[in-house]
Length: 489
Ligand SMILES: Cc1cc2nc3c(=O)[nH]c(=O)nc-3n(C[C@H](O)[C@H](O)[C@H](O)COP(=O)(O)OP(=O)(O)OC[C@H]3O[C@@H](n4cnc5c(N)ncnc54)[C@H](O)[C@@H]3O)c2cc1C
Image (cartoon, rainbow, N blue to C red; front, top):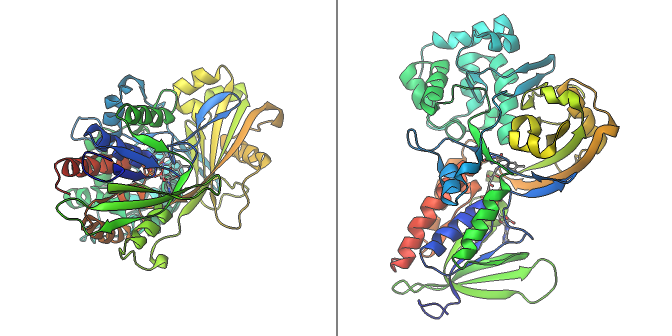
């Protein structure tokens, strides 16, 4: 029973991913009692950790986008990390930059580019990838009059119209596929490159817009480096969030899946009562019921839709939502001093149609993060390959991962050099950024906002990635907690 009446707890949070942890912390810091349910054994969701060859590594997200702060200020993730006392441990990736693997060879990604869209199409590093013909076609963007960009439009269409097929196929498609697990032809430009179309209107061209955005973000540096990480791995963020939540009295119930949630009766003067039913995922014990004043839905996409459906919210036809992507990460730890020279910088993104290579991207983690190189020790390297999976594709084998890593790094890695190998599968990671997604999400959000005592947070509503997820969850949960505290809900 809380000070607010005959309920078990003020707030039930469903899901202990970063969105749920941030929401739980905001509520608890405002003096509300909070219980967090998560179906998994450990908190963190897509931010997870594992041990490979005795090295603690991230097995999900390994960095965060630094954008999102007001001019000159740190972004939402860096601000949260600093609030949790880990500000000095923010790590900047090595400035070597990443490469792209094309069917006819590999090349470093152009320095002045955004999602592969070149800011200076005739620069040497762009011509190396596009050839003169492709580069001149891309440069035409400077001279083609700019028509109005539709409010919601696909990134692929814009790039193709302004700069031609070569930029789309050889630069933008591998990068967007690697980062967002989707083709640029279905990706909403506003979701992945906020401000790009506005900058196009101001600058009169796509390449001009890219330069303007890079200038604004202060990221005129090697491709892929508008991100940061944490010394020791991103999982430290989860550990710090959990510790802080516990300090404020949050109770965690792990390995417990929520089956349903809903208000018991119409709220009267702020006294709505929600009942949440959850069951252990480990045994057949009786489901438990918990009453609360409010509920935060912070699950991944499929569960979130089902829970909102159960609340009578119109979630639309299931087929209107894109199929969530499944990604398999293959981690290899190898002893090979040839990798000390970082032959492909911080990693390689793979264009479609490269014969013999199944991976869509490789991160040379020890070349990217100095803290990891030091932890691994001299000559030992961590390679992380990602694979898009569908229902019929089997997971990659160690031999496949080794063969892909060899091809992508331009040297033959010997099986005897392998010190550790691990596979991690991630399901239900929705390509948030598809065209039409924002409209679907807004339709859901406005219905959810009209339900007293309900808050929905998480990447499938906020936008894939920690920056968008943390920003949305922190702002929304802080307002929500304030309203609960002051009795406005
Ligand atoms: C392989 C991979 C790598 C990534 N790398 C990066 C990166 O480097 N940088 C970056 O910014 N972003 C990255 N992302 C994306 C980023 O990790 C996510 O956008 C973010 O972590 C999502 O957080 P969330 O809390 O919204 O959701 P999730 O992390 O999905 O958390 C949802 C939680 O809900 C729980 N849950 C589900 N159903 C139930 C239920 N019925 N009852 C109770 N609990 C339930 C789940 O167990 C899970 O813990 C990556 C994603 C993947 C898959």
